[in-house]
Image (cartoon, rainbow, N blue to C red; front, side):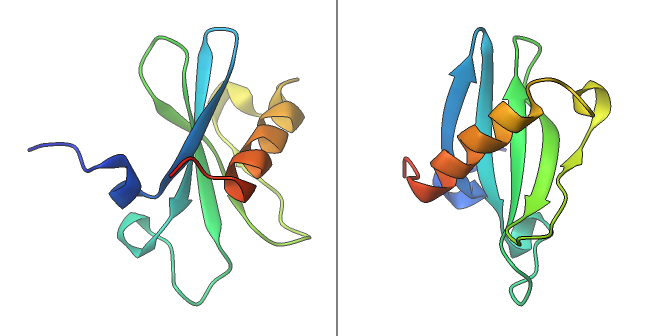
Length: 93
């Protein structure tokens, strides 16, 4: 089965730091999002070992991002969220 086209998967864009590429997706109903909830986003990282989800967050003022694995408490977290916010404001698609 072919992978879905990136736009069909909620893809908004990529940004990078060193060898790591971060990809931002809007989570739609097909990916577990709910149409009546605030927008939800996920960030994937590919640092050469293949893409994997590292964070999910909801677009609300009081929301706390959920980080996964070794990314919990990482020094890059604030930088990654800032890059995601820029990508959400100005998506590549």
